[in-house]
Figure (cartoon, rainbow, N blue to C red):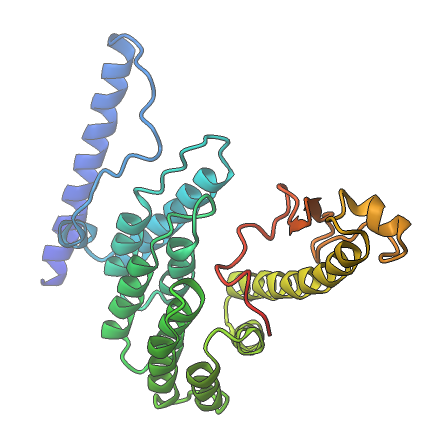
Length: 298
């Protein structure tokens, strides 16, 4: 489009917006009050349509839709409703990354949003993989996206063969770190070994560009620490049950038997719960929900 043509398009857009604002003001003045529209309404669902409407403001609109994505996820996650619905999460992420195909944070952190199991997320690792593969199509040499797909297979789908394949693919891309190849081999050889999980998240915490991703990795490492603590606490529970013939009723029982110095707390500072010999995290612990391999051993 020529320069005069672009100026005419922008002028027309501004005129239409001004007319729409004036008309809306008139309607609000004359019409009876109606309930406000929910902020979770997605007015444009078609990425191609939005791309055409965006003109030269695609990056700006991508930022707007990314903010809406974060707000939708955060508002839903923090809501008190029992049935948390993340229906707009993938459509918002799809629009964001269609407007800006190189929006790496939207791909990487959006995948974590999607893969999180309920109630912390929609529990859709399949959509997380789909989003990351979309990112790889626009940035085929971005090794972090291939690594993240391996993460999803490893952490949320417990598919170690696919995880190792994606880590290997990531290791072959330009600029990939040297640690990816041994991690791929370890993943394939040891499956869900907790030590390999720790190595993966430590590298994510160390190398991630976005502070959000580093924070997510730090939380995963705390979850792994909690699993290790639970293993040690189960030893004390088993010792008591062997001595007395029944599981301990509570932590005071174990403290009184000199098997523990005090009530144990998780890495986030919340006390563990003990019921009939079973140990779980406090319902308010930010480490919930725990990973699916809770019963795994190192």
